[in-house]
Image (cartoon, rainbow, N blue to C red; front, side, top):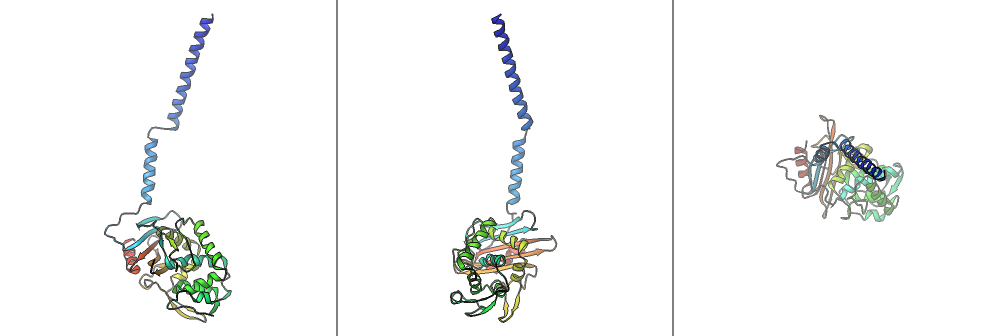
Length: 294
């Protein structure tokens, strides 16, 4: 009797093990249908391809870095062209785009501020403010974006305190995911102000979505500032490219020529954002991008 019980127990254990193993095998077939790994690989490859710059032949950009993207400001942007777009480079006065954002986020534009001695020591531009000039913050903002005035940028930062102001610039860059961007001052004069072409294209998208005032000022060819006079934009391409919706020039010896320019494409109802960094002739290289990346 004991032998029969032992045999029966062994057979029941064997049957139970067979059923258990079969159930596991069936579950694998249910949750991992044939070809799923291959399908996932295809999806991953397709996603990657969408993010790779479209091949553009016979386009040689003589610059340290460049990028052209297409964006409707809603979905993910599409890279049309890129060259060293994730390389950190000094960005000169493109810095002032972030300076403008911090101004609009924190200041009363009607408040009167004055150019002090420290601000007056900043590198002068052809059209610039001078020691003792007192105007509304909005006027300094306009002069900074149109003429690229370092004195205006510094005066704006001094209204809060330069250290705190620059801290907000870097915090904003962090919030926007601009991981390869760092600001050392509000003017862009220091070569420690660095970013990448791709970070700056994302900043341009953010401005177009949220700061129409910055875009409108930056694309204006001429402005007449009360109690100051008429000023002319540093971007020489504005007269040639009426589709421009946002623009900023930059230049220092270390950074060379820098230029950000965004255009509205009426046919596609979207935007083209172009960035040039480290160019000997930023305007010529930008025209190459614009004429090719449509």
